[in-house]
Image (cartoon, rainbow, N blue to C red):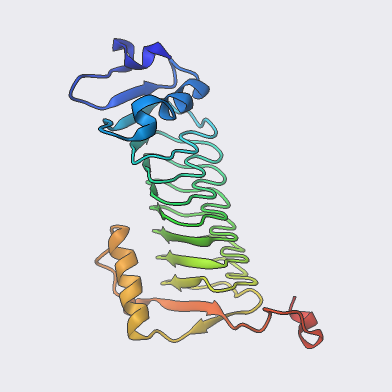
Length: 245
């Protein structure tokens, strides 16, 4: 643990705090992010995590306004349960990045595997590349912007929040969706049960423009996007709809 402040970590008085996963264990790195001044977020310097080498659960459970940059690829559940912190991943992310995030932001500069932003209640997740299957599954208030395309069953049982896709969507988009709002610029392979295309009103263009700007894509024309949401036929079980479940 003490090596975190030593010369081997590359820390300088005016620069970021560098935590090297070749010299520290993941448990030590995550414990440090949850301890002392870092846990309070008061006056904390930016944190840089080097040599992640696909480690799982990097920077999980943060609950302070920290700025954390991970230089490389991460494995499962990176930045999960995030609150307040800004986490930037300069690489690809494995399953469940930003899962159950409450607030703050997570940016993935590469691609993300399945279940990105699953069950997340708030905050902003930006994926510059593609996201695999089940992106935004059971999302409950998070905003997700994907620079590329997403895989099948994305936004499955999405309950609240917004999902923006600048590329294409795979099969069964928004299956059993509740009140989440989806915006897709490209093609959709197929819609899931109770998910339908909806007209774009002025309020939707404004909402989409705000999301795109927040994610770093202000140049996109909102007129190129189609909005999707719930047809609200399956909120309650009805025998006449049994074939649609």
